[in-house]
Image (cartoon, rainbow, N blue to C red; front, side, top):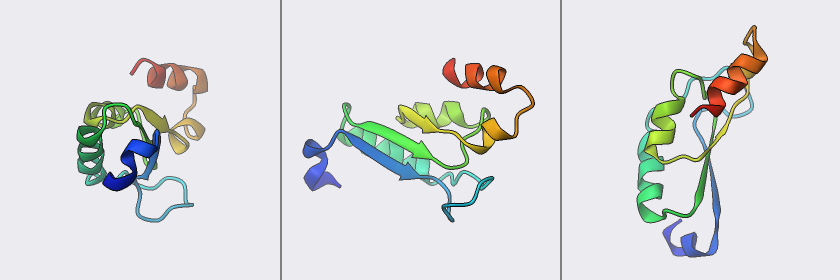
Length: 90
């Protein structure tokens, strides 16, 4: 991605092994990819999709992601509004 990084403003990283299935576990090695990408560019939007929960959102953001795609964590919560607000407080 380094050769084209100055030409793009958005990178979307998948953080699960098998895409297309809900409820998959976040793969921790993606954190290093996020950190590496952020070190290369402070301006690119880093979007992360897959296995995002209230328990791991802070470490994903701390690694450098600035957009989280959340699915299962919302659909499985008993209080959608409270969960959305908890994600927004990040």
